[in-house]
Length: 111
Length: 115
Image (tube, rainbow over the protein chains, first blue to last red):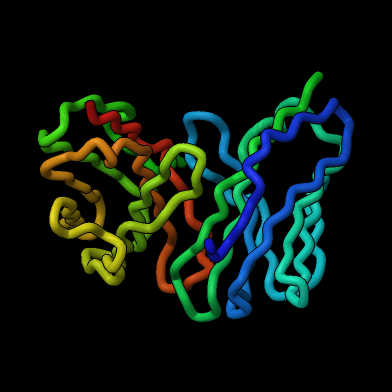
């Protein structure tokens, strides 16, 4: 079993829809949770990171962490065609430098 | 400000041939990472440098992979000999360094195809 599980999709939504992307994990030692966006033929770029449980909002993006369920989510409001990309969740142990990535979910936002 | 630069962007070689990838991190970034990304998967760490020192190479297949970061700036990742299963994207990333939560900035990657 992988430490981080993420549905690869693809997920296709109409423009303006609310998108929900999710990851589950098995190791309760993870304390830092991140979401990266990766466009085709590009490297990942950090969107948001959160520490422990709770919510964090940045513009149209909201990250949620539920440590009791070992479940994290990224919500995208008013989705745009420019949001079409692969979204990778990632996690890190406290005090560690190693980032564990999910497999990524491919998102298509149709105009 | 220039981002992380990688070259070549694409490389096609036959199996058993050697190949090398080059990375120039963001100026001032002391930490450099090499990742392997297989199709449909997330990046997996191969090696992490703090300046010129390889501080985590536990995931680097040392029988065929090697890396160096002379002078603590540019880095080269080499595979010799390449195998069919090495076909993947090799990503380089850099961060300011010293703290685990320093944001990592990724380059565009080198897409390797081994025939």
